[in-house]
Image (tube, rainbow, N blue to C red; front, side):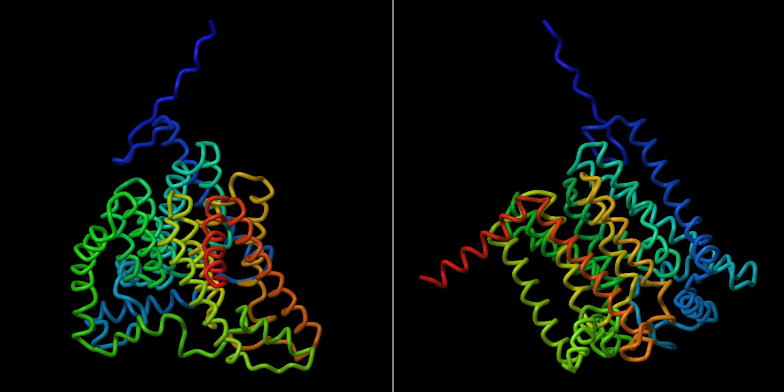
Amino acid sequence: MAKKPKKESGCTFLGIEFPSIKKDELVRNIAIIAFLSLITKFVLINVTTGIFQSFIDLFDISLYLEYAAQIAGGQIPYIDFSLPYPILFLIPALLPLPFALITQNAMTYVFAYQAFMSLFDIVIAILVYFIALKIHNKQSAFIAGIMYATAFSAAYFTITKYDAFPTMFLMLGLMMTIYGMKNGGYVSIILGFFAKMFSLIALPYTLLFNSEKTDLKSEIIAVLKYGIPVFIILLVPVLIISPSNIMTYLSAAGSGFEVYVNTPTYTIHALLLPAGIDLPAETISIFMYLAMVILGLYLLATAYIKKIGNEKNLLAFVFLTIFITIFFSKFHSPQYLLWISPFIALFLVPNYRDIVLFYLFQAVAYIEFPLMWGGYYMNHTYTGELYSANWYTTLVFFIFEYLVMLYIVYRIITLNGDFKDKLESLTQAISQRKQT
């Protein structure tokens, strides 16, 4: 009689139980993912400046250094100088400061900053791997971790912006939620909000997900129990110092900006121009924001009425809500792809063609910035003369980029049949109610 195959034993690592993988294999995979993450950034810098003769954007880091230097000089943020970021931004801004002070060299600050952000990004890659171990088999999970670790466009913005820091909090919160550490998940997501506001998008979905195992009231109480102290500590003092600091949070959607040209909003405006339709981009933006609100409410209603059900659906709800926030906004910074790259790696891993799609997404984002910046577009205008070859090239590129993004969304929805059924069933229920 044939013996049954021996079931592979799992392990516990950092207090987390991984039932499908042994500890030595887990640690080895983590080390490989971390190494690939660092190598990707090293190669990226050399390819960008060497092969493509482009640039590593240090503009934002120079601002961070300026804020850190003011603090080192005895000035207090929000009192002596304005700070257009939430308060936890000061953590990545101040971490490299001692190195700059010791060497009295601004470039030391830059290199130290990039090193710290690279470490945060390694944490994101490991969190992607941990989450993937919960929703995929261990081979696919490892590939998902490698995909994010080698996401070269995300790597570019890791070493030039600070978005990897709040993204780390978001992914940590989701990982903790998925592994049953719900209170830690709430705290991490709320802390992410005080690094950059988009992290809070995950909070209602994690609350609903957890409530399916308990009840909605107890989860709301838990969020308030852990959230209110954090808000009191991190927000109230800032508002007492100056109530106008609330604008840091209210202006998060770019309400004070013109429509950026690297947005679907402006792309629609530009696409209509050759047909003789000069519909103002600001007018289009009104409908885009309306679509954002409707779709956001639809996703939230689906999660509430049809239930989230499982970990993959939780990730899908969070991803789609962040995606529509980016897609329909009139303000766009290319580093926003950092917010969604971990999710795309998690969803596109099972199929090799979808893995190619993941790297295509990274490629078009990398071409957008830094390669096309300046030569083809600036924030508020295409650099080529209207209807010139340069102008049409820019328009065609942005059309292609957003079609790629929409196709990724389509693939993520269709790959997750249960999630797709939930969306469709709510639509059918609404249609039937209208008919009756």
